[in-house]
Image (cartoon, rainbow, N blue to C red; front, side, top):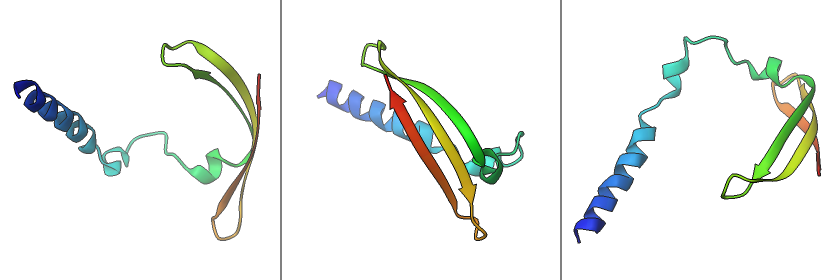
Amino acid sequence: MKLKTLLTFGVCGLLTGCSSMQINDFKDTTPEFVPQKYFNGPMTAYGMVKDRDGKVIRRFKGRLVGSWDANGVGTLDEKFVYD
């Protein structure tokens, strides 16, 4: 019974620990994130997929092209190649 109570409080503590962060906490930080600038034009992405033990099991490369219409709606065309 004590273990169950301890685990319940532990999980609640973990969940509430992350919930105190608010987007407004970062409003005056730099550099300013402007999606229309960051996701505009051609981009290249590299990454890897790991298993539970942290071993790399796959790698990938992505070619992305971001564009924006007059209404501010963005499109990100993505093509990924995995090894």
